[in-house]
Length: 612
Image 1 (cartoon, one colour):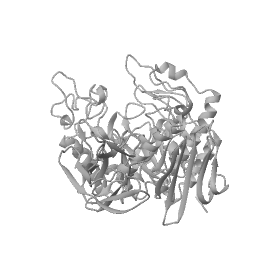
Image 2 (image 1 turned 60 degrees about the vertical axis):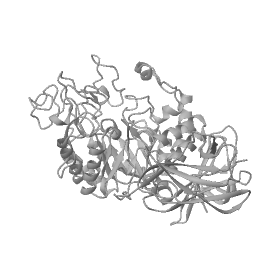
Image 3 (image 1 turned 180 degrees about the vertical axis):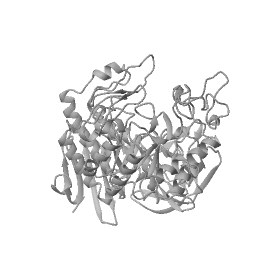
Image 4 (image 1 turned 90 degrees about the vertical axis):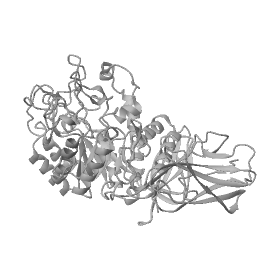
């Protein structure tokens, strides 16, 4: 028997689920069993980082089913808060907080509180972001069109070869190229449209030495190995004609040591911050008397930008700065690389600059943890308080899906979902960038079915491929993962090639060339069918309710009142079949099969049902 019941992701217990707007009243209801019979119940709320508390005495409401209801009416200013309950007149545990399973639990002391985020919306969230599918492209590895001429000492490889991975004189130079370019993306726009892609996220395209381009040399130029500014204009024009927007990768935390801004080895003459104390870029960097300088994660090739530099802030965020400049040229937003390394004094200006240029522009942050309570360098960030990010890369959900699909751990997924639903504003939750893998992770197919090679030499990763049996299993599990990715809140972002079951361990093996001559057509067809489902508003903007998380089964409901659409998605990764109660007639949108009252799910079975 549960002595106390409380679930903040259920409107019965918290009238506004998720983060709450500033100065908007909402109710909190705690249910306590008659046997407990406290003399008084208090809701205790405190602001993050503070010891002072605010107490709301809860009034007793109508009771039933052996429980009494205790209710508090709450209204708060913007900020991050924590809360728990106190029961007076109780002999034993008199604190009520969040247990390890996210349910209400009794505590003697050291009560674990629930999180409560309060936001104040400054910028409207773009309405186009969560429609359709996002597709991530590393330009050099997606498609080559025409001849690409290598610059400097860069090495051209044959399409489909394994990328270099061994160090050269102790340094990983990332100087092997395969010829992918912007014209190649233009040529493949019909292919992307067939996947219902509505947003292209491009890894960095600006002039840089490396193949990945995260070591920017010049933010004002398209890298000549990728094309020209005219190619970018044509890409934007043709993509927009197909209803596809372009999101660029904003690397505003560091530059390349060979860049015109730093110019370590005098590639750009005698100027640059490292050589010239009078350089306009000098205050961008922390350069020490002994010639060393602050780098990103101690990579000598990546000197870190001082976010407090007025010169850097103006260069990126001024009226003619880099952020608004490329929006004017056709981009629809920025994905901010390592945003947790970018201090608020710079981040606020980036956001303001983008929104001033285009109020409909999107700002997406690379955050690997819960973005609602992230602490970086001892500072609590406020990404989701309505004044900064529109969205973040949903790494927590990626990990939850993998833990569930690969290992059958439905509670891992349920806990991640609980945290997102409870902690994030709805306008962020429905616009989360749902990934299964990126250029920084093991390919999802390998992650699901391959050998786990977390701490092995790259030589081992280079020669380890999926066996035929592993590949078949991986394809089965990838379909299950994609079903969840496409139908949970947020929008799916497909890393190029995952839709044709590419494999590979972490960088650089997850960055191989797209296999245009060896596509897995069955997997591709499956992704196209899922892409069609993303045209339904129930999956972009519908309400979310978790239905089942037990015995290796996870199921949830999406409801769109505007279109009167109800959808149920269920996956069985348990060892036994499962009878899922529906309560009505539903049709499977993948197979057309109809179910009445119950749906029988076999192990590894999945359904996407729409209420008839």
